[in-house]
Image 1 (cartoon, rainbow, N blue to C red):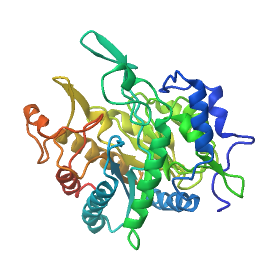
Image 2: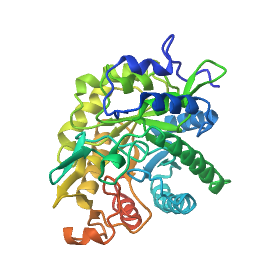
Image 3: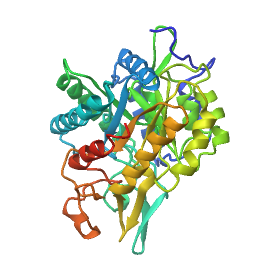
Length: 395
């Protein structure tokens, strides 16, 4: 392993997060069953190879240096009923189609990172969901509970972690086989369900700890508390990690967070993922850029999550707001002397109708034609390609 990779703090252990406040974790009724699942996962095969995570870190360092463009994207959340082979093939084709015009415009190779082979858990704004007179635990992703609105389906079930792991191993293997001899597509997901992450953490021969659940893990906007469990966990792994930067992130708090997660300022270690919203980006991004300073982190934009609204009981995103935030990000970063490194999109190669505009549905009444997301609205393949075209002058 490379001697320049980050080392965990002295005596760090994968379970240290248990001593810190842990947000967004499910309440498992059967603790014995949970412990049995964790024990099984500790002996399970890794989803990714450690050397590949190291390669990705080197590539992200090149993103920060302006030598590569990072394209990160995929489904809001994976499902257990996904057809893996078709899903991998279609997503790979979409990545390649989007990469071609980006590379032609920027003269930089596109680094492909998919939200795949582990993106099964979702943070929620409320712990429960109410329909009529009934209130049940919120759906938190297939790795935790089911989408159906009943008590048994919404109960947190630990054995779902086993199914998520098996599917992730199969998806990662399918992806690697499909990309043989082509630019690789790395895997990524939000590091949310900490018992799962801990159980799949492994130590290499140099004493470094790695999350083997995915190549790239990110810290969510709801779980980046400096003294919280998610920061405690991510501070110890050597993988490249992302930090979602939403409107509630105080610029004065960002340096301390970076110092905790990247005390050695290791190139390729940190990717800052801006998700401020079209209405907030002009005011809130410049202070964040200034606060981070020249640490060698990569900066990319997630123009999806800050532009979510709810109309007639259904979440939607508007293409014009997505485009506006992305354009503002590239301009403001350059004005601050920072390399704008790429984009992070929730997108599907399928002809879904979940975001308005950009060649997709034009009105709320049209969303129902193919509204299939398990959680948040995604751009369809045509909208994702249109976004690349409309961003061309900004890249």
